[in-house]
Image 1 (tube, rainbow, N blue to C red):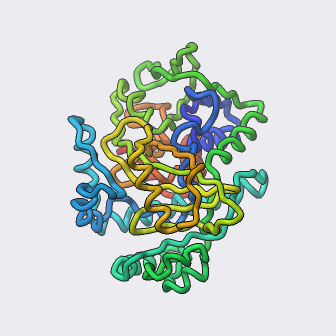
Image 2 (image 1 turned 30 degrees about the horizontal axis):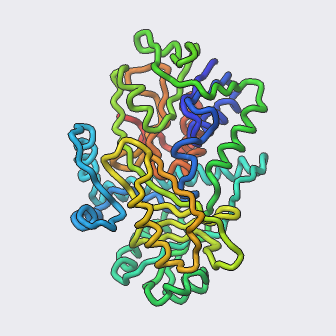
Image 3 (image 1 turned 90 degrees about the vertical axis):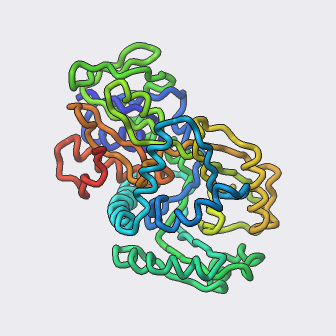
Length: 415
C-alpha cells in the first residue's frame, strides 16, 4: 500500500514512522526542504503528559475581560471579519463547562499516557539524542487563591494515574534554587516528577534519520502540496508543484495548512490558529537557570532547559494568520522573564513564533475523514504536538490497519 503523509512536523513524522513499521510504502511530503520548520521548530520543549487540560475552562471566562483589555495579557485577541473565527470562539465558550473539561481531561490523559509509553518503547530500541531530561515539571503560583483552586484538579488527576504533589513556597525553592529571587512572591506550586523536556526540532531530525534508513520510505521534501486529487470518495493522488504523487491512502498532518487543503473536498476542519512565541537563550556558567521545567501559572510562561540553552515559551495571539514575530510581544516577554530570573542574559536570545492548530475543546482529530474512504486525519494537537505526537500516530495507524486500538478512538473523531 502506498501511503502519502502530508506534513513533516512532529505529528507527520511520527505518523510516517509507525506506518513504515507496518511495512507500508510511505512518502512524506512537505513544502520545506527540511523537517520541523514550522510549529515543531522552537516550541516550548515540553513533554507534559499530566498537563493536558483544555484551554477552554470555566475559570477562563472570568479572566477574559482583563486579558483582552490589558496590554500585558498572556492572551491577545484581534477581532476579524472572519466567520471561522467567531464560530471557533462560540465553540470555545460552549466548551467552558466543568463536565466537558473533566471528560476532555480524562480522554486526553489516555492519549498522553499512550504517547509517554510509546516514547519509552522507541528510545529503548533507538536511543535518539534530543536533549531529553526527565527532571519533572514545577508549576508555581503567585497567589494562594490560585493554588487552592488548582488543588481539586490535582487530586482528581492523581486518581487517573498522575503523580503530582502540592508544595509550599520553600519547597519550590528547595526543588528549584533558581527561583530564590522570587521565592517571597510564591504561594507554592505543583510538582510532577514524571514530566520531561526535550528539543522537538532535534527529535524530528532524529526521526527523519530513522526514516531515511528504511527502504520503504521516501522523503519528498521541498514539494508544495496544492491539492488532493479525488474520484468520488477516494483520493487517488497528491498534487504538488512538482507533479502528482499517486496514493492508495493519504494522511493529512499539516497543521493549519490542512484547512485550505481539505476544504475543496467539503471537509471543514474546526481548527483555528493560536500564535505562540518562544525565546531560546544561551545559558552561561555564571547564571543560575532552571534545571527542570518551570511554569509561571499567573503569566503562562514556560521555562525548559534544553542542552546548552533555555527555551522560554509564552503567550497566545488570536486573530492572526501568519507566524510573524510581534516585537512588542517579545519585549513584554523579556520584561516578565527578567522579573523572575534577573540574572538571565537575554541579549543573545533568539525569538520565534509559530501557529498552534487548535480545536475549541483542545482534542486532536485522529481518524478517517468523514465521507472519504482513504483519507485520514492527524491534526489539531494545538500546543501539545510534541507531547501527543507518538500516541496520536499509534492511534491513527491502529485504525488504518484494522488493529485493536490502544485507547478508545471515539473522542478524537472529527464528527
